[in-house]
Amino acid sequence: MSANMNELTDLLDLLSGENFSFMDDNGSHVETVVCQSAFNQRALLYTLSILYIFIFVIGLAANALVVWVNVRGSRERHETHLYVLNLAIADLCVVATLPVSVSSLLQHGHWPFGDAMCKITHLVFSVNLFGSIFFLTCMSVDRYLSVVRFGDAHGGQGERRRTRQLICMGVWLLALLAALPDTYFLQAVRSTHSDATTCRSVYPAETTWEWMVGVQLSSIALGFAVPFPVIVVFYVRLARAVRSSADHERRAGRRLVFTYVMVFLACWLPFHGVLLLDTLALLGAVPLGCTLENVLYVALHVTQCLSLLHCCVNPVIYNFIDKNYRYDLMKAFIFKYSTKTGLARLIDTSRTSETECSAMVGQGHL
Image 1: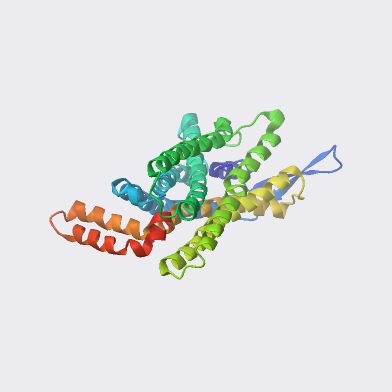
Image 2 (image 1 turned 90 degrees about the vertical axis):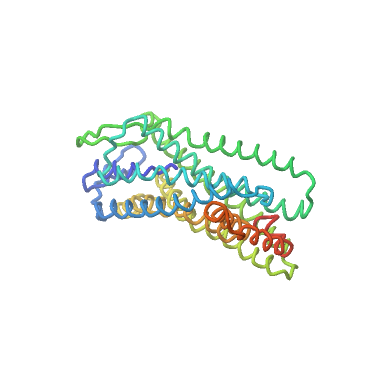
């Protein structure tokens, strides 16, 4: 989002083992302090590369499978099918950009792909990252409305489906608008300290700090500060709405609600917490000494890398543990590889017998 992984390697190349901190003496004089790097740069680069490769392999396989099954599956059985499909597409596009970034990391920040690829890669990454978060937020609201407000009513299904389609279009548009400002300033810049070229943001010289702070604050607001409270409120309201039921599936649904909230929190709180601290340091609200600068420097990029684990976790908690999805997955493989057997009909018969006892899960997709 705002912390481009290429900025890490750009600074590694630029500083050649040293970080620079700027501290305000008396409001009129700025003293430059040289901070020695307190971490192994090469180890950091290779560790991040390994983590990104892991996320790419697992995320690509899992989300591609989810897209394939949802496209082939029976859409009428899933209230949030459209959000699940778009979420998987967004996560799939996020991980698809990682090999390009890993290639740059392994070359110690050198960007050999040109100015256009610098912008395109970041735009695809950012749009789909914001889109993934926005679709998770929409799903929390939609599940609450589907289970609590609409219940088992089947009337107006067509109208609700059209509404979801319009919401999905709005989500993609909002994600594009959120990613455009930082992408606009991205350039493939030739380093003044070496022959390497780096992909990084080049803001107007007279307003550099304002743009940096503005981009980071918008990332915090759109990526966590607004979506997380919405997710918590609607999932908690949904859990309370089914609290009085003794049905096993509904109790399992409440546990799943807790899982949704905690996974989102675990993936995104560390990164946005560090990003907020970095923003406060830019604003001068937090004293920026050498120790804090080194910590922020590493923490920003490590937490961003770990936040992308959501691309691997989302397919599991929003698809693989759901009965409807597992049935569609089994049927998809059976129809493809065992069309001459009667297993598909057997699965359909079994599924029909279990539909009533999992009504809340099927209707609300919990």
